[in-house]
Amino acid sequence: MNPTPTTATLSYEQSGVNYDLIDPLKVTAQRAAAATAGHLAAHGFSEVVASRGESAYVVDVGPFYIASIVECLGSKALVADEMHRLTGKTYYDSIAQDTIAMAINDLITVGATPLVVQAYWGAGGSDWFADAQRAQALVAGWKHACDVCSVAWGGGETPALSGIVEAGRIDLAASCTGLINPKERLSVGDYLAPGDAIVLLASSGIHANGLSLARKLVERLPQGYLSEVSPGLSYGDALLAPTVLYSPVTEALYKAGIKPHYCANITGHGWRKLLRHPAEHRYRIHTVPPVTPVLKFIQQHAHQDDREAYSTLNMGAGFAIFVRAEDAQRTVDVARAQGVEALVAGQVEAGPKELLIEPLNIRFGNDDLQLR
Image (cartoon, rainbow, N blue to C red; front, side, top):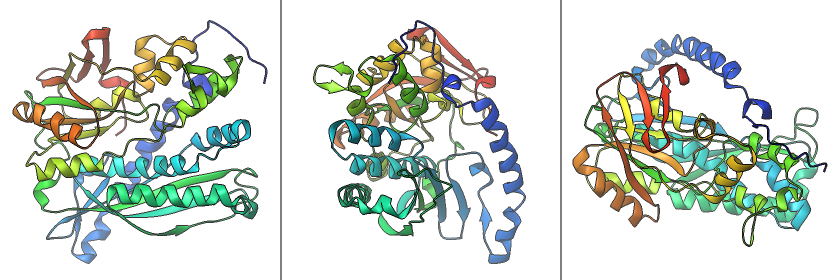
């Protein structure tokens, strides 16, 4: 490793991820996909049109809705592989939880109860599975995450993709299907309105987004992944803290009689995801959560200002729930009872579509997030 200390800003685009190139393809794909919705009528079903462009797709099958999602882990497994080389420890139990969380945390935004998870583990060759400790950790972590979310692990696919996936590497993904039952649980923003409160649920760290930036940053660190983020905590270990599974919170909210008007999984695009719903509202943030040490570390060493950091990373908030103002504190209490820290961070107002993070003097407008 040749560390290259510098004071230049390291952006997400410089690390190899340019959403200006990716997002137009997503929009094109959504339009093509929407043209296939008529096929559902042959089965007596129909799509929930408002779910197009949301984090999960919803189908009306009569007595209830079915929601579905597929998500990949991304490049976090590369960090686990490097930390295994440096420490001898396997991190694939945590990596498994990350993968499932990517799917389940998207699925629950529309009000769904996760029901079944399927696994996709595409390895660079059959020999990847010969490391028994690593393979068993992946299985154990996958099952543990399923148990936390009370979902069935239905099955999966384990292809050996030599020539497509690099030798010694694995590409992980999960799909998830859930039910919205009763149908009143559907949450696609129909009830989102001025006066609603914004409740933010704490993250455990970087989760599984922004890893391209985090890995690129290693080039600037003389001790690389073993650099200390805080006493006794290495950069690599901090990055590999597993993503929080938020479905126990959303299920507990339903049992408590609290109906979210909208939810946003704060992943890629950082806090800009609070602008995901197409309606014209102003989202005013008056309180920001504590930033986890690893995210502070990344912002500091990448020399990012607050706007750049909050446009890319979760900065301590992994999930947003929009509820009636009178339900805001109870939502916080329910989340804390499930072991997830939360706070009432702001409110929805009438006005142009924008996000105002007042404590940091940051504004994101409609042009800062184009996903439809």
